Length: 74
Image (cartoon, rainbow, N blue to C red):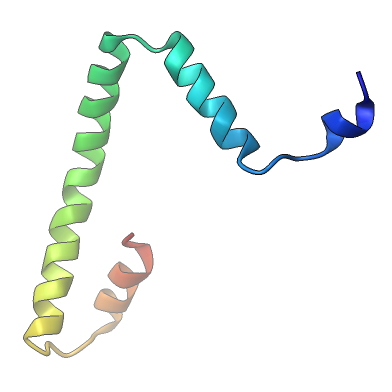
């Protein structure tokens, strides 16, 4: 095997590896558990995003707390 080819990063290499691992090793129960965990973690983020959007639409005055929220929201 040519070592130059092995050491060269490929476009989307990590992404392709993750896809292979997911397709090969995850079962339905894993997907259910991932869904449960991610739903619990992301539920609050969606609520905060909605609040910030409402504040923008109503031209709410910005405060330091809002700037902090904006910096951590996706």
